Amino acid sequence: MDLPPNLIPDAPFSTGDEGCAPYLLTRPVRRSVPLVFASPHSGRAYPASFVAAARLDPVALRRSEDGFVDELFAAAAEHGAPLLAATFPRVFCDVNREPWELDPGMFDGPLPSWVNTASPRVGAGLGTIARVVATGEAVYRRKLTFQEAEDRIRRFWQPYHAALAALIAETRDEFGCCLLIDCHSMPTHPAQAASPPDFVLGDAHGTSCAPRATRLVEEALSDMGYRIRRNDPYAGGYVTRHYGRPREGVHALQIEVARPLYMNEERIERLPGMVALQADLTRLIAVLRRTDWSFLR
Image 1: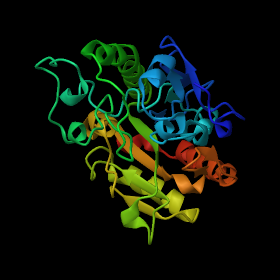
Image 2: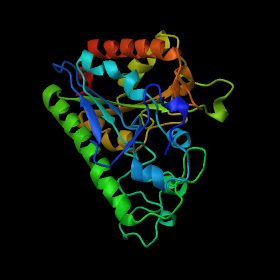
Image 3: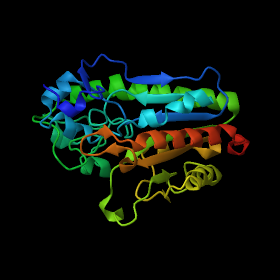
Image 4: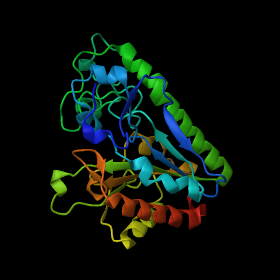
Protein backbone atom coordinates (compact mmCIF):
# COMPACT_ATOMS: atom_id res chain seq x y z
CA MET A 1 0.00 0.00 0.00
CA ASP A 2 1.33 3.40 -0.97
CA LEU A 3 1.56 5.87 1.88
CA PRO A 4 0.15 9.40 1.65
CA PRO A 5 2.88 11.99 0.96
CA ASN A 6 2.42 13.68 4.32
CA LEU A 7 3.53 10.51 6.08
CA ILE A 8 6.85 10.17 4.31
CA PRO A 9 9.26 12.96 5.48
CA ASP A 10 10.14 11.64 8.93
CA ALA A 11 8.80 8.12 8.38
CA PRO A 12 6.35 8.20 11.29
CA PHE A 13 4.39 5.28 9.86
CA SER A 14 5.91 1.93 9.02
CA THR A 15 4.71 -1.46 7.93
CA GLY A 16 6.43 -4.75 8.41
CA ASP A 17 5.84 -8.21 9.79
CA GLU A 18 4.57 -9.02 13.26
CA GLY A 19 8.05 -10.05 14.37
CA CYS A 20 9.14 -6.59 15.51
CA ALA A 21 9.94 -6.06 19.19
CA PRO A 22 6.71 -5.17 21.03
CA TYR A 23 8.27 -2.33 22.98
CA LEU A 24 11.26 -0.06 23.36
CA LEU A 25 12.72 0.40 26.82
CA THR A 26 15.03 3.35 27.45
CA ARG A 27 16.85 3.00 30.74
CA PRO A 28 18.83 5.67 32.56
CA VAL A 29 22.52 5.18 33.19
CA ARG A 30 21.65 5.26 36.88
CA ARG A 31 18.23 5.02 38.51
CA SER A 32 17.83 8.06 40.77
CA VAL A 33 14.07 8.40 41.26
CA PRO A 34 11.18 5.95 41.93
CA LEU A 35 9.40 6.82 38.70
CA VAL A 36 8.45 4.78 35.65
CA PHE A 37 7.19 6.48 32.49
CA ALA A 38 5.14 4.53 29.96
CA SER A 39 3.69 5.39 26.56
CA PRO A 40 1.30 2.59 25.61
CA HIS A 41 -0.40 4.22 22.62
CA SER A 42 2.34 5.96 20.63
CA GLY A 43 3.42 2.89 18.65
CA ARG A 44 3.42 3.35 14.88
CA ALA A 45 4.83 0.11 13.45
CA TYR A 46 1.81 -1.25 11.59
CA PRO A 47 2.07 -4.95 10.64
CA ALA A 48 1.59 -5.37 6.92
CA SER A 49 -1.02 -8.10 7.37
CA PHE A 50 -3.06 -5.77 9.59
CA VAL A 51 -2.93 -2.92 7.07
CA ALA A 52 -4.04 -5.34 4.33
CA ALA A 53 -7.01 -6.49 6.43
CA ALA A 54 -8.12 -2.95 7.31
CA ARG A 55 -10.75 -1.10 5.31
CA LEU A 56 -9.36 2.29 6.38
CA ASP A 57 -6.45 4.22 4.93
CA PRO A 58 -3.28 4.68 7.01
CA VAL A 59 -4.12 8.20 8.19
CA ALA A 60 -7.54 7.10 9.43
CA LEU A 61 -5.93 4.22 11.30
CA ARG A 62 -3.37 6.54 12.83
CA ARG A 63 -5.96 8.83 14.39
CA SER A 64 -6.25 6.31 17.21
CA GLU A 65 -2.57 6.83 18.03
CA ASP A 66 -1.29 9.01 20.83
CA GLY A 67 1.04 10.46 18.25
CA PHE A 68 4.59 11.33 19.30
CA VAL A 69 3.88 11.04 23.05
CA ASP A 70 6.99 8.90 23.49
CA GLU A 71 8.98 11.84 22.09
CA LEU A 72 7.32 14.34 24.43
CA PHE A 73 8.50 12.39 27.46
CA ALA A 74 11.83 11.27 25.98
CA ALA A 75 13.85 13.09 28.67
CA ALA A 76 12.78 10.61 31.35
CA ALA A 77 15.95 8.53 31.10
CA GLU A 78 18.16 11.62 31.28
CA HIS A 79 16.53 12.34 34.64
CA GLY A 80 16.97 8.91 36.16
CA ALA A 81 13.76 7.10 35.18
CA PRO A 82 13.01 4.44 32.55
CA LEU A 83 10.63 5.04 29.64
CA LEU A 84 8.70 2.10 28.21
CA ALA A 85 7.01 2.66 24.84
CA ALA A 86 4.91 0.23 22.83
CA THR A 87 6.02 -0.07 19.21
CA PHE A 88 2.72 -1.46 17.88
CA PRO A 89 -0.35 0.74 17.40
CA ARG A 90 -3.34 0.94 19.71
CA VAL A 91 -5.77 0.07 16.92
CA PHE A 92 -3.89 -3.22 16.41
CA CYS A 93 -3.80 -4.22 20.10
CA ASP A 94 -4.68 -1.96 23.03
CA VAL A 95 -2.58 -2.53 26.15
CA ASN A 96 -4.76 -0.12 28.13
CA ARG A 97 -7.48 -2.77 28.20
CA GLU A 98 -7.82 -6.09 29.96
CA PRO A 99 -6.07 -8.79 27.93
CA TRP A 100 -9.27 -10.47 26.74
CA GLU A 101 -11.88 -7.75 26.18
CA LEU A 102 -13.22 -8.89 22.80
CA ASP A 103 -16.31 -8.08 20.77
CA PRO A 104 -17.93 -11.35 19.61
CA GLY A 105 -19.40 -9.58 16.57
CA MET A 106 -15.90 -9.14 15.16
CA PHE A 107 -15.13 -12.85 14.96
CA ASP A 108 -16.04 -15.65 12.58
CA GLY A 109 -16.87 -18.13 15.33
CA PRO A 110 -17.73 -18.35 19.03
CA LEU A 111 -15.25 -17.02 21.58
CA PRO A 112 -14.10 -18.97 24.64
CA SER A 113 -16.44 -18.61 27.61
CA TRP A 114 -13.79 -16.87 29.69
CA VAL A 115 -13.43 -13.92 27.31
CA ASN A 116 -14.89 -10.63 28.59
CA THR A 117 -17.49 -9.79 25.95
CA ALA A 118 -19.68 -7.53 28.07
CA SER A 119 -17.53 -4.61 29.22
CA PRO A 120 -18.53 -1.04 28.32
CA ARG A 121 -15.37 -0.76 26.26
CA VAL A 122 -16.33 -3.80 24.18
CA GLY A 123 -19.79 -2.32 23.74
CA ALA A 124 -18.21 0.85 22.38
CA GLY A 125 -16.12 -1.15 19.91
CA LEU A 126 -12.90 -0.32 21.76
CA GLY A 127 -11.83 -3.57 23.35
CA THR A 128 -8.37 -5.11 23.37
CA ILE A 129 -8.77 -5.54 19.62
CA ALA A 130 -10.69 -2.47 18.46
CA ARG A 131 -13.70 -2.87 16.18
CA VAL A 132 -13.82 0.84 15.34
CA VAL A 133 -11.53 3.87 15.41
CA ALA A 134 -12.29 6.94 17.50
CA THR A 135 -14.51 8.41 14.76
CA GLY A 136 -16.73 5.30 14.83
CA GLU A 137 -15.59 3.86 11.49
CA ALA A 138 -15.17 0.09 11.32
CA VAL A 139 -11.55 -1.06 11.12
CA TYR A 140 -11.80 -4.38 9.27
CA ARG A 141 -13.13 -5.52 5.92
CA ARG A 142 -13.67 -9.07 7.20
CA LYS A 143 -14.30 -11.09 10.35
CA LEU A 144 -11.26 -12.05 12.41
CA THR A 145 -10.45 -15.45 13.83
CA PHE A 146 -9.97 -15.86 17.56
CA GLN A 147 -6.49 -17.17 16.80
CA GLU A 148 -5.57 -13.78 15.31
CA ALA A 149 -6.63 -12.00 18.49
CA GLU A 150 -4.92 -14.55 20.69
CA ASP A 151 -1.70 -14.18 18.71
CA ARG A 152 -1.70 -10.39 19.15
CA ILE A 153 -2.41 -10.63 22.86
CA ARG A 154 0.29 -13.21 23.49
CA ARG A 155 2.93 -11.61 21.27
CA PHE A 156 2.29 -7.93 22.02
CA TRP A 157 -0.02 -7.31 25.00
CA GLN A 158 1.60 -9.82 27.33
CA PRO A 159 5.26 -8.86 26.68
CA TYR A 160 4.46 -5.16 27.14
CA HIS A 161 2.77 -5.79 30.48
CA ALA A 162 5.47 -8.21 31.58
CA ALA A 163 8.03 -5.46 30.98
CA LEU A 164 5.91 -2.85 32.76
CA ALA A 165 5.25 -5.08 35.76
CA ALA A 166 8.97 -5.88 36.01
CA LEU A 167 9.90 -2.18 35.95
CA ILE A 168 7.38 -1.41 38.68
CA ALA A 169 8.57 -4.29 40.84
CA GLU A 170 12.25 -3.43 40.53
CA THR A 171 11.51 0.24 41.26
CA ARG A 172 9.58 -0.58 44.40
CA ASP A 173 12.31 -3.01 45.49
CA GLU A 174 14.99 -0.35 45.07
CA PHE A 175 13.18 2.71 46.43
CA GLY A 176 10.39 1.28 48.58
CA CYS A 177 7.75 2.80 46.30
CA CYS A 178 6.94 3.49 42.66
CA LEU A 179 5.03 6.16 40.77
CA LEU A 180 3.96 5.10 37.28
CA ILE A 181 3.30 8.00 34.91
CA ASP A 182 1.13 6.64 32.09
CA CYS A 183 1.47 9.05 29.18
CA HIS A 184 -1.30 9.70 26.65
CA SER A 185 -2.68 12.36 24.33
CA MET A 186 -6.30 13.43 23.94
CA PRO A 187 -8.20 14.63 20.89
CA THR A 188 -10.25 17.79 20.88
CA HIS A 189 -13.37 17.01 22.95
CA PRO A 190 -16.59 18.62 21.61
CA ALA A 191 -18.07 19.01 25.09
CA GLN A 192 -15.06 21.09 26.15
CA ALA A 193 -14.74 23.23 23.04
CA ALA A 194 -15.40 26.47 24.93
CA SER A 195 -12.70 25.89 27.54
CA PRO A 196 -10.56 22.88 26.65
CA PRO A 197 -7.96 21.67 29.16
CA ASP A 198 -4.34 21.35 28.16
CA PHE A 199 -3.85 18.36 30.44
CA VAL A 200 -6.17 15.93 32.18
CA LEU A 201 -4.72 14.05 35.16
CA GLY A 202 -6.39 10.73 35.86
CA ASP A 203 -5.95 9.02 39.23
CA ALA A 204 -9.18 6.98 39.18
CA HIS A 205 -10.79 9.64 41.37
CA GLY A 206 -8.09 9.45 43.99
CA THR A 207 -7.85 5.66 44.25
CA SER A 208 -4.80 4.88 42.08
CA CYS A 209 -2.38 7.57 43.29
CA ALA A 210 -1.65 9.55 46.44
CA PRO A 211 -3.48 12.89 46.19
CA ARG A 212 -0.25 14.67 47.10
CA ALA A 213 1.48 13.24 44.03
CA THR A 214 -1.38 14.23 41.72
CA ARG A 215 -1.40 17.71 43.23
CA LEU A 216 2.35 18.07 42.74
CA VAL A 217 2.07 17.32 39.02
CA GLU A 218 -0.97 19.58 38.73
CA GLU A 219 0.80 22.51 40.39
CA ALA A 220 3.96 22.10 38.30
CA LEU A 221 1.97 22.22 35.05
CA SER A 222 -0.27 25.04 36.28
CA ASP A 223 2.80 27.09 37.15
CA MET A 224 3.83 26.81 33.49
CA GLY A 225 0.51 28.35 32.46
CA TYR A 226 -1.38 25.22 31.42
CA ARG A 227 -5.05 24.53 32.13
CA ILE A 228 -5.48 21.34 34.13
CA ARG A 229 -8.45 19.12 34.89
CA ARG A 230 -8.66 16.00 36.98
CA ASN A 231 -10.48 12.83 35.94
CA ASP A 232 -12.74 14.60 33.44
CA PRO A 233 -13.25 13.11 30.95
CA TYR A 234 -10.36 10.67 31.50
CA ALA A 235 -10.04 9.15 34.96
CA GLY A 236 -7.61 6.43 33.92
CA GLY A 237 -7.83 3.17 32.03
CA TYR A 238 -6.82 -0.40 32.72
CA VAL A 239 -3.17 0.45 33.35
CA THR A 240 -3.93 3.12 35.95
CA ARG A 241 -6.51 1.04 37.78
CA HIS A 242 -4.65 -2.26 37.57
CA TYR A 243 -1.21 -1.08 38.69
CA GLY A 244 -2.21 1.77 41.00
CA ARG A 245 -2.16 0.19 44.46
CA PRO A 246 -1.18 2.93 46.90
CA ARG A 247 -1.45 0.67 49.95
CA GLU A 248 1.30 -1.44 48.41
CA GLY A 249 3.49 1.55 47.62
CA VAL A 250 2.66 1.56 43.90
CA HIS A 251 0.93 4.67 42.53
CA ALA A 252 -0.28 5.27 38.99
CA LEU A 253 -1.17 8.60 37.39
CA GLN A 254 -2.44 8.99 33.84
CA ILE A 255 -1.45 12.17 32.01
CA GLU A 256 -3.46 13.18 28.93
CA VAL A 257 -1.90 15.89 26.76
CA ALA A 258 -4.13 17.94 24.43
CA ARG A 259 -3.12 17.13 20.87
CA PRO A 260 -3.68 20.65 19.47
CA LEU A 261 -0.76 21.81 21.65
CA TYR A 262 1.72 19.96 19.48
CA MET A 263 0.24 18.11 16.50
CA ASN A 264 -2.09 18.42 13.54
CA GLU A 265 -4.82 15.93 14.44
CA GLU A 266 -6.02 15.47 10.87
CA ARG A 267 -2.66 14.87 9.23
CA ILE A 268 -0.84 13.32 12.20
CA GLU A 269 2.05 15.76 11.91
CA ARG A 270 4.12 17.58 14.49
CA LEU A 271 3.42 21.29 14.88
CA PRO A 272 6.07 23.89 15.80
CA GLY A 273 4.56 24.01 19.29
CA MET A 274 5.89 20.52 19.97
CA VAL A 275 9.35 21.92 20.74
CA ALA A 276 8.06 24.18 23.52
CA LEU A 277 5.77 21.49 24.93
CA GLN A 278 8.57 18.95 25.00
CA ALA A 279 10.74 21.48 26.84
CA ASP A 280 7.99 22.06 29.40
CA LEU A 281 7.50 18.34 29.96
CA THR A 282 11.24 18.01 30.43
CA ARG A 283 10.93 20.70 33.10
CA LEU A 284 8.12 18.71 34.69
CA ILE A 285 10.28 15.59 34.74
CA ALA A 286 13.08 17.59 36.34
CA VAL A 287 10.67 18.76 39.08
CA LEU A 288 9.67 15.15 39.71
CA ARG A 289 13.31 14.10 39.86
CA ARG A 290 13.99 16.64 42.63
CA THR A 291 10.96 15.59 44.68
CA ASP A 292 11.30 13.58 47.89
CA TRP A 293 8.98 10.67 47.22
CA SER A 294 9.24 9.04 50.62
CA PHE A 295 5.58 9.93 51.26
CA LEU A 296 4.57 7.27 48.71
CA ARG A 297 5.87 4.41 50.81
